[in-house]
Length: 300
Image 1 (tube, helix red, strand yellow):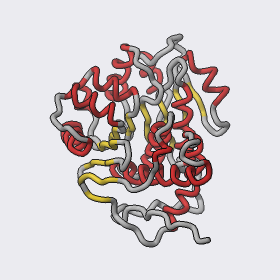
Image 2 (cartoon, rainbow, N blue to C red; image 1 turned 45 degrees about the horizontal axis):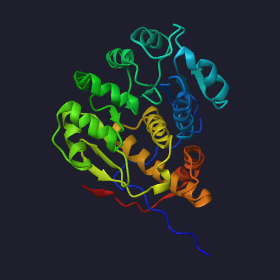
Image 3 (tube, rainbow, N blue to C red; image 1 turned 120 degrees about the horizontal axis):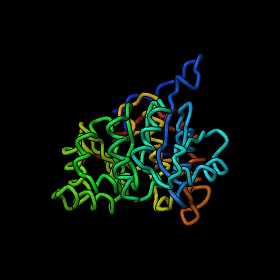
Image 4 (cartoon, rainbow, N blue to C red; image 1 turned 180 degrees about the vertical axis):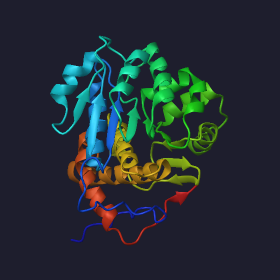
């Protein structure tokens, strides 16, 4: 029985860069995931694991002190961990200052499991003001953006926002946007922020400076806790490897969906969990790199 053909990647994206024979981990880039809060350190760990499966050379989870022991005990062996040592159980502006003094990553992921402490809104502001390198803002990082809409001015084209529909609605209300559907809201949000917008859901819509594109991979089984953290870490890895934000977002969305499809073939949609998507990324990358005929996503 012949296997079903897989959907081919977008034809207008540049090929995935080949690894030189003399590659080392520094050449492949490093990702720092800034997240975690009481009970939610697993989100940052999932993102870090996905970043490594996405091909970056190093991945580090930066978590508040309250999560340091849990992160160290639960993290994959290949993932590094860091905490500020300020005794707090959430991210704060002073913790961000310590973070910036101790990290020089190729890319950032901010928000996975970060929680909704009000002081963390200030931490996001401090982070955006001092970061260098492209950044993915996910999950409660988007909630904090809604608390301080003027921070939108600090995003720019090397930032990727990854809202699901509920987060997109919250951004609409906070920013007084007018769109009533995912496509229109994505275009509005991209225009006012200049960031790349990944509006997650069935047929994820990615909107950047070149337009909007609907993805054709993925399945209902991916509606599971941690799936978005996996996507954030994967896009972070592609940014660290040198993709610009729009390319990283579109490539990452395709790979994430394809890995979800492969995982569903093995586990079924009903039993799919986020870790299964991470483990299927290797095969998704093989298919992506080996595809000789590519089709474009559906332009919106």
